[in-house]
Length: 124
Length: 191
Image (cartoon, each protein chain N blue to C red):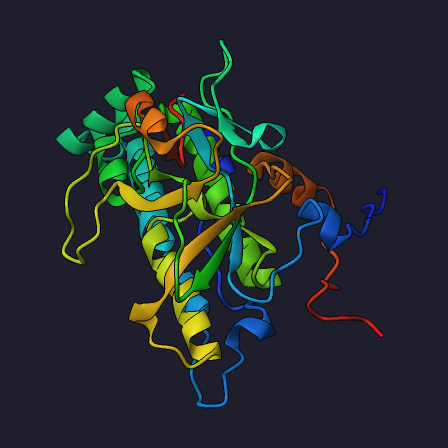
């Protein structure tokens, strides 16, 4: 029997070079509906044709006392593209998670009219 | 079909092998907030896993004729033929709009994600979508911060910064399946 080849994976390689921050946490796996993320174009920008749900890069959640929204767009994060849920006994929605602040060159109003949102699961 | 699903979905998430860092108590003897979140998630996963495996076993027996095909089993069978997630599973499961095939694959990723969290400790980047209840994870994050800096939790807000890399859970899964993950993370510096 051939012995099982063991190879050690560098943990930083596994997590794309992301290291745990001193405060808060890093999350990943969010999809964008009606938009696309391009850091070279100031963040949130208009989606490409044929790209239904582009991925948002990893996001660092930073707990803070004072939050400056600025000109950022508060993109609602939903679990599914249904974008509707029922209120559970804990006071949370079954679908809505939280608003995520995203940088953009365009004003927030523009994205509100576009109906841009984040989702955790795509429909396949 | 039944065998296929049974093969890709684990029996149970085990917590016996929990990583030491996750159980380390702080100076006031409290368990880390995110460990509480993790253990609650494990409980939800195991509840759903039990329902899935029970119904698969019963359905298999019903097809062979050892037990009576009940309404519930017939509904599951009909869902399989339509490539839908059976209502019995989705009622116990996480919110999803996926069809059966992608749902099973998604659930496999979730199981592996939770088991890896238990075995290797907190990942550097967390798959928020892989949890039943992401809100509790966010609260856990805030509570960790509140305890570390002795701040009231309800005064805390979450600020966001988008980073450069785009991790894909399927890739992380594949990498972890390929080989043993080194236990030396940057948190435990090796001198």
